[in-house]
Image 1 (cartoon, rainbow, N blue to C red):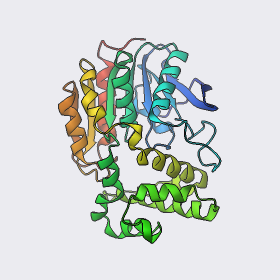
Image 2 (image 1 turned 90 degrees about the horizontal axis):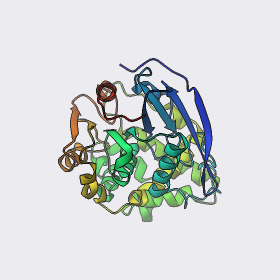
Image 3 (image 1 turned 180 degrees about the horizontal axis):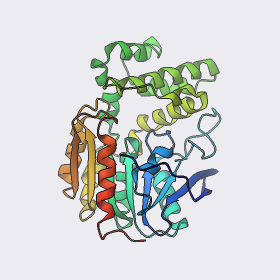
Image 4 (image 1 turned 180 degrees about the vertical axis):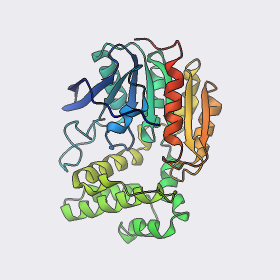
Length: 320
């Protein structure tokens, strides 16, 4: 149900400060309804799949690679790259800078997985700039969610989790695994860093594998991608997205009047349905759509995402 492949008609590198340059691109209808896509990870980068979630005749679709990943520079795979200027506040500021750079007043915000946390944080900070909000594989990156994905969900994948746990020194195995992996990924020995990145990405691929048609993510075979991904994920997770726990849930009242969709797979082991359900209770304008055959993707998830963007294409709220 995705729209056909499409190429951007404009792109560039935006200097966002702190020595960071963010890659951005625009595709679809230059005079269409503005929308921005926020990728997951953190650190996945915004690939061509995201362009296809929107009707290209209707939407002016903005994609960008968040700080430190994809085509943005400097790339977090390099051990010398300092991550101190890579926080949720920095990313929210980057989104606003890009919006102004492209002379957009309001836009639909689409975010998945980590991008749902970022999209929600952006929307509660700048509700006047959001015409609609579509979040899928919904997470808020709270501390209990980080503990779930690094420890508790191991009950469903005991063999894979045992390997993940054994990837850190014995003294660290009963403590915070995300802290332990972060230390390994910053070790001066490149062999230690490489093994930690491989072990981390192997676990990431394990807990999303809840459907028989799951295929390993080929991006993890790229040494630069897996190092960047592992460094950025552990950086954000160990700080619980640099947000106070439950602040997004408390501030969801700021979304009143913004229509939206919360799309979540019932089989999602990586991020339990509880999070999307809680958010739907705090944000009445956000319709909860549960996809019974989907996990953290797959199944009917894509159909539900496209259905949401199609539905909002016909609403009067978009401002060009």
